Length: 325
Image (cartoon, rainbow, N blue to C red; front, side, top):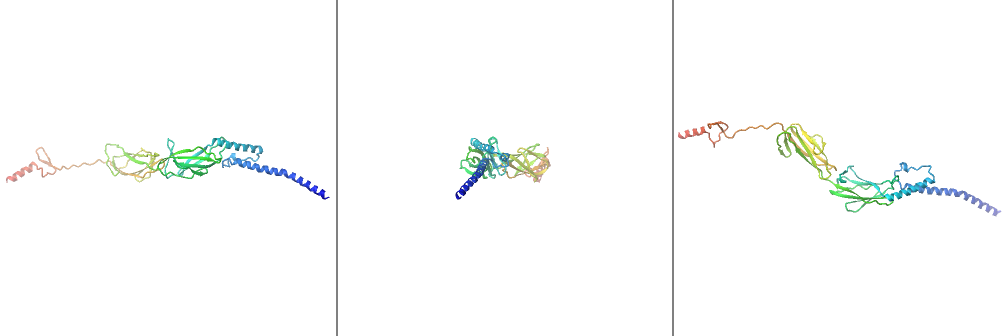
């Protein structure tokens, strides 16, 4: 009886064990599937709201296998491409680039570099792990993530900024270089006076006398990034922006106060130049008083004062008569 009971219990245990095997197999498969999906999404950008990152609830094992293969292709494509998009930015949002692909900036502005994995076809990049930057021939500084810290260059002149980007698969791209020109010197201004009618100018301590409705030309020169604008204020009014070489008409008579300042393409601004300009429409009056007496044809005085050193004929006669008496 005891033996029959033992055999019955063994059979019952075997049945229970067979019923549990499918459940254990299903749990193992689900765990493996989750791991596969995680490995695929790790190779995608963080933009989980895009249509490419949304998983379909009805995906079956075949679709999951295709997704895994696509992830492998993505790694291969990144390995083959190894390319990234990048940008140089400033905290002012202003960066001047000339025709020689040189970037002008002042030491007051801070800059940084941002990088992104460039897509290869329809496949996204895996993400940027770090950016390394050096100035001139110095050492590389490492920054973790898709952008560097803000930095500036204090010495005027041209400086190469070299950087290289490494993605999350440890692929490092070729070094790239921005040619930076640091310009901390503001422009210098100049005023030229145009003659509208015959006349000349008298200048003393920036005081200029000019004829009526005179025009002045304003100029600014800059040896670095170039002139962006010239700002002019008339008689303590607001500043108005002009281009270098523009002319301004001074129409009112009397004193005009002209203030000028100029700004270059990296926002260096000159100090104000102040010009006092007099518009004079009245010709000068000439009054001549002779120092010596004027004589007529007979030698007689007709005006002015006699000079004691040059007596007239009448005075000579009187002098002779007085001498004989």
